[in-house]
Image (cartoon, rainbow, N blue to C red; front, side):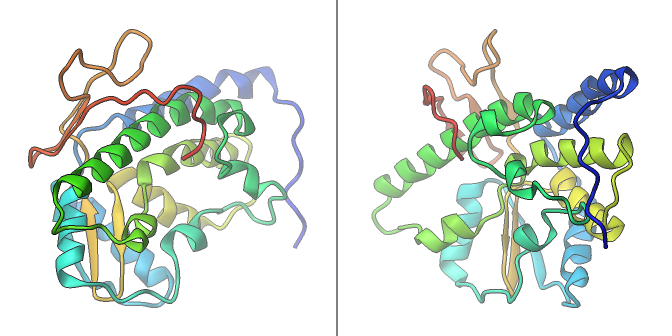
Length: 242
């Protein structure tokens, strides 16, 4: 099968559509709710993609609540990865790695604005989870639990890029893989995928930004979840990685 064509220049009409797709996915990135029915169907489709029946799918109010639940019940690892095995829907695309790079400047223009916001959000949530772990000596989050979660908000920038490539540039792609990947990112919060259980965190109920679109709330939580888990902004300077 031939590689996807390398497009070095967009037409004026194609370039004019970039804000439409960026705003579409930015809206999803800033959403404060999920539809559990749509999320459940998306995850069942993901397991089915690998010819596997989905386990119990349980929704939690925050990533912290999901990690505590996982700590209590343990986990049985899958033989596949929903993240790694669904992540690149374009067929024989030669630059896949550039769309999961950790540095913002290595991403495409259409990804950067979204990525800046979600990287900061992820950094602050991770920082708070580490603080919570320090405060609760009886609950120590295993590293594999932290690393094993799918941070769907981080993938929104990639979905924006792929949506543009597929919908506007008409690049060859695996439609089933794209629909499955897109629906997971669109409908789910953080995911912890295992054979015996699949935990899904609800999205924050509130996000607070300053005039520069940095997470900030003047002494108040910048990110708040329904169960009371709160995240205060820890600005990460020039940090570009996830």
